[in-house]
Image 1 (tube, rainbow, N blue to C red):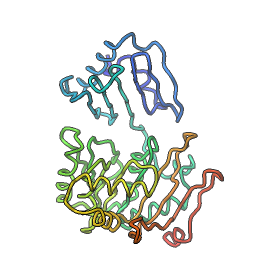
Image 2: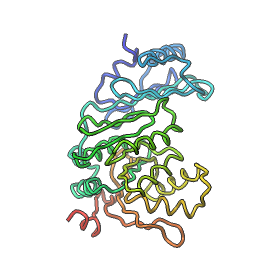
Image 3: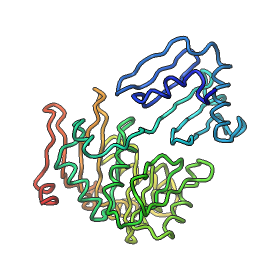
Image 4: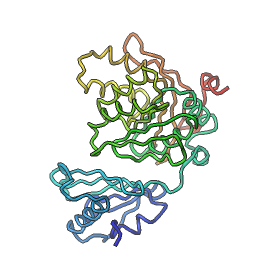
Length: 326
Protein backbone atom coordinates (compact mmCIF):
# COMPACT_ATOMS: atom_id res chain seq x y z
CA UNK A 1 0.00 0.00 0.00
CA UNK A 2 1.12 3.59 -0.65
CA UNK A 3 2.57 5.61 2.20
CA UNK A 4 -0.55 7.80 2.00
CA UNK A 5 -2.98 4.99 2.78
CA UNK A 6 -6.56 6.24 2.87
CA UNK A 7 -5.41 9.64 1.59
CA UNK A 8 -3.97 8.15 -1.59
CA UNK A 9 -6.88 9.22 -3.82
CA UNK A 10 -6.55 12.80 -2.59
CA UNK A 11 -2.80 12.74 -3.03
CA UNK A 12 -3.13 11.51 -6.63
CA UNK A 13 -5.61 14.25 -7.56
CA UNK A 14 -3.50 16.80 -9.46
CA UNK A 15 -5.91 19.63 -8.64
CA UNK A 16 -5.44 19.21 -4.87
CA UNK A 17 -2.62 21.31 -3.42
CA UNK A 18 -2.98 20.63 0.32
CA UNK A 19 -4.46 17.89 2.50
CA UNK A 20 -5.10 18.65 6.16
CA UNK A 21 -5.94 16.23 8.98
CA UNK A 22 -6.81 18.10 12.19
CA UNK A 23 -8.39 15.03 13.83
CA UNK A 24 -9.33 11.57 12.64
CA UNK A 25 -12.86 12.93 12.02
CA UNK A 26 -11.82 16.35 10.69
CA UNK A 27 -10.15 16.00 7.29
CA UNK A 28 -10.24 18.51 4.43
CA UNK A 29 -8.27 19.59 1.40
CA UNK A 30 -7.70 22.58 -0.88
CA UNK A 31 -8.60 22.08 -4.53
CA UNK A 32 -8.28 24.95 -7.01
CA UNK A 33 -8.31 27.43 -4.14
CA UNK A 34 -11.44 26.01 -2.47
CA UNK A 35 -11.69 24.05 0.78
CA UNK A 36 -13.50 20.69 0.66
CA UNK A 37 -14.33 18.39 3.58
CA UNK A 38 -13.94 14.63 3.67
CA UNK A 39 -16.07 12.32 5.76
CA UNK A 40 -15.53 8.91 7.35
CA UNK A 41 -11.96 8.47 6.11
CA UNK A 42 -10.55 7.40 9.47
CA UNK A 43 -12.14 5.47 12.31
CA UNK A 44 -9.94 6.66 15.15
CA UNK A 45 -6.57 8.13 16.15
CA UNK A 46 -4.85 4.77 15.72
CA UNK A 47 -5.37 4.97 11.97
CA UNK A 48 -3.78 8.43 11.92
CA UNK A 49 -0.77 7.08 13.82
CA UNK A 50 -0.44 4.26 11.28
CA UNK A 51 -0.48 6.82 8.48
CA UNK A 52 2.20 8.86 10.27
CA UNK A 53 4.37 5.74 10.71
CA UNK A 54 3.95 4.95 7.00
CA UNK A 55 4.96 8.45 5.91
CA UNK A 56 7.98 8.44 8.22
CA UNK A 57 9.04 5.01 6.95
CA UNK A 58 8.89 6.29 3.35
CA UNK A 59 11.83 8.59 4.19
CA UNK A 60 13.59 6.04 6.43
CA UNK A 61 12.54 7.64 9.70
CA UNK A 62 10.77 6.28 12.76
CA UNK A 63 8.36 7.76 15.26
CA UNK A 64 11.21 8.55 17.64
CA UNK A 65 12.28 11.22 15.13
CA UNK A 66 9.22 13.24 16.17
CA UNK A 67 10.81 15.70 18.59
CA UNK A 68 8.60 17.47 21.14
CA UNK A 69 5.52 16.47 19.18
CA UNK A 70 6.61 17.84 15.79
CA UNK A 71 8.23 16.52 12.61
CA UNK A 72 8.74 18.11 9.20
CA UNK A 73 9.27 15.77 6.23
CA UNK A 74 10.19 16.18 2.58
CA UNK A 75 9.13 13.17 0.52
CA UNK A 76 10.90 11.98 -2.61
CA UNK A 77 8.66 13.96 -4.96
CA UNK A 78 9.09 17.17 -2.95
CA UNK A 79 5.83 16.88 -1.04
CA UNK A 80 6.07 18.51 2.42
CA UNK A 81 4.48 16.86 5.45
CA UNK A 82 4.14 18.57 8.84
CA UNK A 83 3.24 16.19 11.68
CA UNK A 84 2.06 17.10 15.18
CA UNK A 85 1.43 14.72 18.07
CA UNK A 86 1.31 14.92 21.86
CA UNK A 87 2.39 16.85 23.86
CA UNK A 88 1.76 19.85 21.58
CA UNK A 89 -1.27 18.52 19.69
CA UNK A 90 -4.25 18.61 22.05
CA UNK A 91 -6.82 16.95 19.77
CA UNK A 92 -4.66 14.01 18.76
CA UNK A 93 -2.23 13.52 15.87
CA UNK A 94 -2.52 15.86 12.90
CA UNK A 95 -1.03 16.26 9.44
CA UNK A 96 -0.57 18.98 6.84
CA UNK A 97 0.46 17.65 3.42
CA UNK A 98 1.61 20.25 0.87
CA UNK A 99 2.11 18.95 -2.66
CA UNK A 100 4.44 20.44 -5.21
CA UNK A 101 2.71 21.24 -8.50
CA UNK A 102 3.66 18.76 -11.21
CA UNK A 103 4.02 21.52 -13.78
CA UNK A 104 6.17 24.54 -13.05
CA UNK A 105 4.30 27.79 -12.74
CA UNK A 106 5.64 30.74 -14.75
CA UNK A 107 4.91 34.41 -15.30
CA UNK A 108 2.46 33.60 -18.10
CA UNK A 109 0.40 31.54 -15.65
CA UNK A 110 0.46 34.39 -13.12
CA UNK A 111 -0.78 36.83 -15.75
CA UNK A 112 -3.52 34.41 -16.86
CA UNK A 113 -4.59 34.10 -13.20
CA UNK A 114 -4.36 37.90 -12.78
CA UNK A 115 -1.79 37.63 -10.00
CA UNK A 116 0.05 40.47 -11.74
CA UNK A 117 0.18 42.07 -15.18
CA UNK A 118 2.85 42.54 -17.86
CA UNK A 119 4.43 45.56 -16.18
CA UNK A 120 4.51 43.74 -12.84
CA UNK A 121 6.36 40.88 -14.51
CA UNK A 122 8.88 43.24 -16.09
CA UNK A 123 9.54 44.96 -12.75
CA UNK A 124 10.15 41.61 -11.03
CA UNK A 125 12.46 40.51 -13.84
CA UNK A 126 14.36 43.80 -13.79
CA UNK A 127 15.02 43.47 -10.05
CA UNK A 128 16.27 39.90 -10.39
CA UNK A 129 18.37 40.40 -13.52
CA UNK A 130 20.10 43.44 -11.99
CA UNK A 131 21.19 41.44 -8.94
CA UNK A 132 19.20 43.49 -6.42
CA UNK A 133 18.74 42.19 -2.90
CA UNK A 134 15.06 41.29 -2.85
CA UNK A 135 12.83 40.35 0.07
CA UNK A 136 9.81 38.33 -1.08
CA UNK A 137 7.10 38.61 1.55
CA UNK A 138 3.60 37.23 1.77
CA UNK A 139 0.81 36.35 4.15
CA UNK A 140 -0.31 32.80 4.91
CA UNK A 141 -1.17 30.78 1.81
CA UNK A 142 -0.14 33.54 -0.59
CA UNK A 143 2.17 31.33 -2.64
CA UNK A 144 5.60 32.63 -1.62
CA UNK A 145 7.44 29.44 -2.57
CA UNK A 146 5.82 29.33 -6.01
CA UNK A 147 6.70 32.98 -6.57
CA UNK A 148 10.26 32.35 -5.37
CA UNK A 149 10.60 29.61 -8.00
CA UNK A 150 9.47 32.04 -10.70
CA UNK A 151 11.88 34.73 -9.51
CA UNK A 152 14.74 32.19 -9.53
CA UNK A 153 13.93 31.43 -13.18
CA UNK A 154 14.25 35.18 -13.88
CA UNK A 155 17.86 35.28 -12.65
CA UNK A 156 20.44 35.52 -15.42
CA UNK A 157 21.01 31.96 -16.66
CA UNK A 158 24.79 32.44 -16.58
CA UNK A 159 24.75 33.17 -12.83
CA UNK A 160 25.31 30.46 -10.22
CA UNK A 161 22.47 30.13 -7.73
CA UNK A 162 22.77 28.51 -4.29
CA UNK A 163 19.52 27.84 -2.40
CA UNK A 164 19.37 27.47 1.38
CA UNK A 165 16.32 25.97 3.13
CA UNK A 166 15.33 24.39 6.41
CA UNK A 167 13.48 21.74 4.40
CA UNK A 168 14.00 21.86 0.63
CA UNK A 169 10.88 22.77 -1.32
CA UNK A 170 12.10 25.14 -4.03
CA UNK A 171 11.87 23.76 -7.56
CA UNK A 172 15.01 24.59 -9.57
CA UNK A 173 14.81 21.87 -12.20
CA UNK A 174 14.60 24.50 -14.97
CA UNK A 175 18.02 25.89 -14.10
CA UNK A 176 21.58 24.71 -14.49
CA UNK A 177 24.38 26.23 -12.35
CA UNK A 178 22.27 25.67 -9.24
CA UNK A 179 23.26 24.11 -5.91
CA UNK A 180 20.54 23.19 -3.40
CA UNK A 181 21.31 23.07 0.34
CA UNK A 182 19.13 21.87 3.20
CA UNK A 183 19.65 21.85 6.98
CA UNK A 184 20.73 18.42 8.27
CA UNK A 185 17.84 17.87 10.69
CA UNK A 186 15.18 20.33 9.47
CA UNK A 187 15.95 22.64 12.41
CA UNK A 188 15.72 26.38 11.76
CA UNK A 189 18.58 27.07 14.19
CA UNK A 190 20.91 25.40 11.66
CA UNK A 191 20.04 27.95 8.96
CA UNK A 192 22.58 30.50 10.19
CA UNK A 193 25.47 28.04 9.84
CA UNK A 194 24.22 26.85 6.45
CA UNK A 195 24.02 30.44 5.14
CA UNK A 196 27.65 30.96 6.17
CA UNK A 197 28.66 27.79 4.32
CA UNK A 198 26.67 28.81 1.25
CA UNK A 199 28.54 32.09 1.07
CA UNK A 200 31.75 30.12 0.45
CA UNK A 201 30.32 28.25 -2.54
CA UNK A 202 30.74 30.92 -5.24
CA UNK A 203 27.13 31.98 -5.46
CA UNK A 204 26.18 34.81 -7.78
CA UNK A 205 22.78 34.76 -6.08
CA UNK A 206 21.88 33.22 -2.72
CA UNK A 207 18.24 32.20 -2.25
CA UNK A 208 17.13 31.73 1.37
CA UNK A 209 13.71 30.15 1.87
CA UNK A 210 12.62 31.28 4.42
CA UNK A 211 13.73 33.76 7.10
CA UNK A 212 12.70 32.36 10.48
CA UNK A 213 14.94 34.00 13.08
CA UNK A 214 18.35 35.42 13.84
CA UNK A 215 19.85 34.08 10.58
CA UNK A 216 18.40 37.22 8.97
CA UNK A 217 21.35 39.20 10.36
CA UNK A 218 23.86 36.93 8.59
CA UNK A 219 21.88 37.09 5.34
CA UNK A 220 21.72 40.90 5.35
CA UNK A 221 25.40 41.03 6.28
CA UNK A 222 26.08 39.16 3.03
CA UNK A 223 23.85 41.58 1.12
CA UNK A 224 25.95 44.46 2.39
CA UNK A 225 29.15 42.63 1.44
CA UNK A 226 28.12 42.52 -2.21
CA UNK A 227 26.25 39.23 -2.50
CA UNK A 228 22.96 39.16 -4.38
CA UNK A 229 20.31 37.64 -2.10
CA UNK A 230 16.67 36.66 -2.56
CA UNK A 231 15.01 35.90 0.77
CA UNK A 232 11.44 34.96 1.66
CA UNK A 233 9.54 35.89 4.81
CA UNK A 234 6.00 35.56 6.15
CA UNK A 235 4.53 39.01 6.74
CA UNK A 236 1.40 41.13 6.37
CA UNK A 237 2.87 43.88 4.20
CA UNK A 238 6.04 45.55 2.96
CA UNK A 239 6.71 47.57 6.12
CA UNK A 240 5.79 44.60 8.31
CA UNK A 241 8.32 42.43 6.45
CA UNK A 242 11.10 44.92 7.16
CA UNK A 243 10.10 45.25 10.80
CA UNK A 244 10.13 41.46 11.15
CA UNK A 245 13.68 41.44 9.78
CA UNK A 246 14.60 43.94 12.50
CA UNK A 247 12.94 41.76 15.13
CA UNK A 248 14.71 38.63 13.91
CA UNK A 249 18.06 40.45 14.06
CA UNK A 250 17.31 41.48 17.65
CA UNK A 251 16.59 37.83 18.49
CA UNK A 252 20.24 37.09 17.79
CA UNK A 253 21.27 39.15 20.85
CA UNK A 254 24.30 40.43 18.99
CA UNK A 255 25.01 43.26 21.37
CA UNK A 256 24.05 46.05 18.97
CA UNK A 257 21.23 48.53 19.34
CA UNK A 258 18.00 48.95 17.43
CA UNK A 259 19.30 51.95 15.47
CA UNK A 260 22.26 49.94 14.19
CA UNK A 261 19.94 47.06 13.31
CA UNK A 262 17.57 49.37 11.43
CA UNK A 263 20.48 50.74 9.42
CA UNK A 264 21.73 47.19 8.79
CA UNK A 265 18.33 46.04 7.46
CA UNK A 266 17.43 49.10 5.39
CA UNK A 267 20.84 49.49 3.79
CA UNK A 268 21.00 45.81 2.83
CA UNK A 269 17.59 45.12 1.30
CA UNK A 270 17.03 46.89 -2.03
CA UNK A 271 13.40 45.98 -2.72
CA UNK A 272 10.39 44.15 -1.28
CA UNK A 273 7.87 42.20 -3.35
CA UNK A 274 4.67 41.52 -1.41
CA UNK A 275 2.35 38.72 -2.51
CA UNK A 276 -1.04 38.58 -0.84
CA UNK A 277 -3.83 36.10 -0.48
CA UNK A 278 -7.00 38.17 -0.30
CA UNK A 279 -10.07 37.25 1.75
CA UNK A 280 -11.69 36.00 -1.45
CA UNK A 281 -8.84 33.48 -1.85
CA UNK A 282 -7.40 35.31 -4.86
CA UNK A 283 -3.62 35.75 -4.89
CA UNK A 284 -2.03 38.96 -6.17
CA UNK A 285 1.27 40.80 -6.16
CA UNK A 286 -0.17 43.74 -4.24
CA UNK A 287 2.94 45.88 -3.65
CA UNK A 288 6.48 46.18 -4.97
CA UNK A 289 8.68 48.89 -3.45
CA UNK A 290 12.33 49.86 -3.27
CA UNK A 291 13.89 50.45 0.15
CA UNK A 292 15.65 53.82 0.22
CA UNK A 293 16.97 53.89 3.79
CA UNK A 294 15.31 55.05 7.00
CA UNK A 295 13.74 58.30 8.14
CA UNK A 296 14.80 60.34 11.16
CA UNK A 297 11.98 58.60 13.03
CA UNK A 298 13.41 55.17 12.18
CA UNK A 299 10.72 54.27 9.64
CA UNK A 300 11.59 52.70 6.28
CA UNK A 301 11.72 55.04 3.30
CA UNK A 302 9.87 53.25 0.51
CA UNK A 303 9.31 54.07 -3.13
CA UNK A 304 6.34 52.20 -4.60
CA UNK A 305 6.91 50.72 -8.06
CA UNK A 306 3.78 48.62 -8.44
CA UNK A 307 0.53 48.12 -6.52
CA UNK A 308 -2.92 46.52 -6.63
CA UNK A 309 -6.21 48.24 -5.81
CA UNK A 310 -8.54 45.55 -4.50
CA UNK A 311 -11.67 47.69 -4.76
CA UNK A 312 -11.01 48.62 -8.38
CA UNK A 313 -9.43 45.25 -9.15
CA UNK A 314 -6.68 47.08 -11.01
CA UNK A 315 -2.88 46.99 -11.05
CA UNK A 316 -0.96 50.27 -11.10
CA UNK A 317 2.63 51.00 -12.08
CA UNK A 318 4.08 54.24 -10.71
CA UNK A 319 6.33 56.61 -12.62
CA UNK A 320 9.30 55.10 -10.77
CA UNK A 321 8.19 51.62 -11.81
CA UNK A 322 7.83 52.66 -15.43
CA UNK A 323 11.28 54.25 -15.31
CA UNK A 324 12.78 50.96 -14.07
CA UNK A 325 11.42 49.01 -17.04
CA UNK A 326 11.77 51.68 -19.72
